[in-house]
Length: 227
Figure 1 (cartoon, one colour):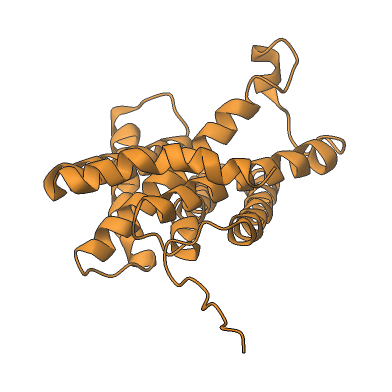
Figure 2 (tube, one colour):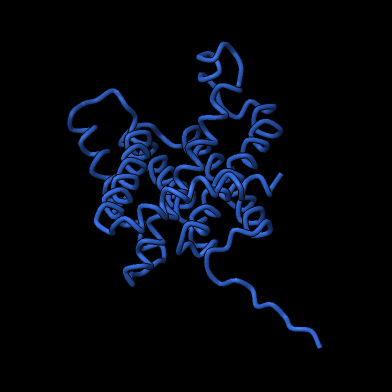
């Protein structure tokens, strides 16, 4: 008679969870990029229609990249946060493959960033990997801290970061800054998400701070298991 091991319900950072979730995340990111490209090419630029749709796509992709890894890993402690960060990293790798193999050969978009790097793609790819990992890390941290306080851990945790994105985009518009609306909203989302995580950690105490600090270190171990 053999005993069966019940599947882990929280803090999942196993190989299958990270790879499966990261692959879905990469595919979702690719779909968001295609939607953004369609909006930029086919919607009218007058009246703010194009920039409005582009901003919605950016924010939807941001919420997906930041919070779905933490939800899929059921992040509650450092191990779950690490799993979310590793999932975010793998998602960016999957998208990078789709970008290089499918989108670039058909010249889906003008990559002016390549000119910044002397015509190479490799200078921005590490930045993309860092951003995806960071968003998933912060999102997993916010989900874990919300759970520790007995609060909702669903996508409602994205409300305040989205509000911050709207505020930053509005301020940029009012100030007349030379930045397009989707970029301002995306930056506002990332900054607000990071600030909320840091503030929550500062209020929660030393134990949660150690949990957060260990999260990214453990993410490297989770990522190494995906190789």
